[in-house]
Amino acid sequence: MSIPQFENRYFEEYTVGETGAGGSRVIAAADIAQFADLTGDHHPAHTDPGFAEPRFGSVIAHGVLTFGVVVGLTVEYNGRAVAYGYDRIRFPRPVLPGDTVRATSEVVDLAEHRNPRIGLVTKQYTGVNQRGDTVLVCKHVLAVDRTPHSEEPNS
Image 1 (cartoon, rainbow, N blue to C red):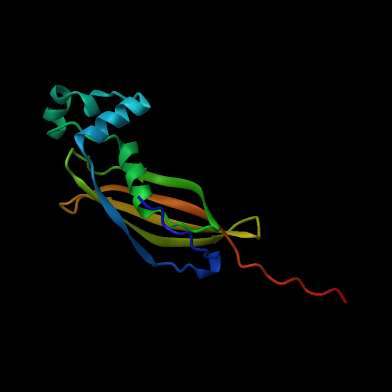
Image 2 (cartoon, one colour; image 1 turned 180 degrees about the vertical axis):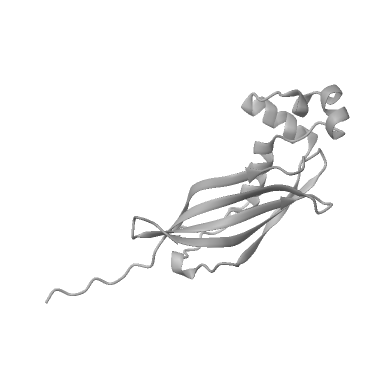
């Protein structure tokens, strides 16, 4: 697998409403089992069909697994941006084994920061399954370098 090339975008190059199409990924039963082992989260909703099937029809993916996949599918490889935080993470529908999660992003806010060298870009990430049901929404706040201004020459 090749890693995408970094691009360099400044804060001033973002616009509210700009969208990005992420990729998609099938979530397999093995992904859910491996995630349970990796994290130690063996809640029966994720690991016990007898518990999960009456409630969900199957075991379900961990919300954090779904979150990680959507973030990975929408990541912007911008050398001038770093994650500042995530807000309002919601899982409106469960992800079942075999579901295909497709991710998109939209810039929903641009804000100043107390540090004048950066601005805050807020993107809404949305993950949907193959039926078009929303399985994740969250806001990702990025700290992005502002365009450097030339310093005034001393008089």
